[in-house]
Length: 476
Image (cartoon, rainbow, N blue to C red; front, side, top):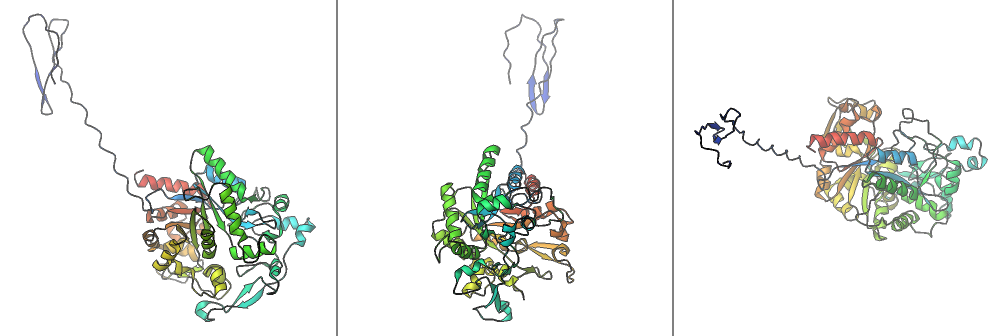
């Protein structure tokens, strides 16, 4: 570089040449004593090295995996209550998950189970409220022959039904058998109007209830689905984040039979799904890009919704009964009623279809799911094989699994164009495999690294923190 200065008065020229870094630099400077000194000019500092390119994420579309607030934040607050949902959003949850049932007056409400004694304070209320006490269902269900081959490989030869009088469809309102599961001597959500539920019944903790806070049990009212939508929208506005709602058509065969008996629709109709579609349309949520995911364990429910005009994203949930800890394979068939509850969709039992949930996870099964859904929601051990090495017959199940390995499910689902949201992540040691050494964040990281698209979590705060660690790990 040459510096141009006004010509000085004639005097002897003094110059210094300083070679710096292979460059010749000339500098001049006048001093008070008439002399001059030559100071080296340093070259420009080198440009900073470009930031390393973040490691690509293994999700279907390369986006950040979702944190789904499973029933809100039930690890800290009574599940599916306003406090649980607001806390989940505040903790960083991207989605608020809820189970849907229809009340006696045909309103969608958020409650995990339709029998109420294990997730509300109804048993205590019944001690002083004669009206509530009188609504306990005490009529036992009846055993019905399966219509597929009654061989041991297909499970028990009979399943439990709430249709105690085949000639009277309203007889389903007398017993409390839900998808083959017996809850005689309990209360059904379908025997109460929304106003009655709000007046008398309040939410409680459910999973790990002996470890989780209980100070708010019985103090927070049951919510309608509309109220959950309103919470989602209010929190999205307050935080400036995209927050979605994630409703499940819970026990759709049972709910529809109950609703029809309660006058919510004609014989053969689908009041549960129709009510969901009506709510979605009323709230501008029936769009492909709407902030909602619709989920169900029963493909009949999702297929009906599609035929009835569902445009939003749908998720086929996939269940299982147990794990073979020697091989890591799933176990679907049992010798008891859980074959019908968790082994296969209940609609398959009624239709005489002996397949198991596992049929959905084969390449052919995933291709079928893709015709009506956008993603799958498998149980965690269907995504990550859990084994005990060296093998010993487990006494405590999952907590003894000391080895994990991703199955092919995420890759297979992504190949079919389906995202994968897995359930359910919890902090308590009783739910953690031994390999995680009591650290719930270690479990999340294993699934994030495997490419999971989303996690259903009872502790959205922990899931969010684990995701932050994962994103930092990938250079984000």
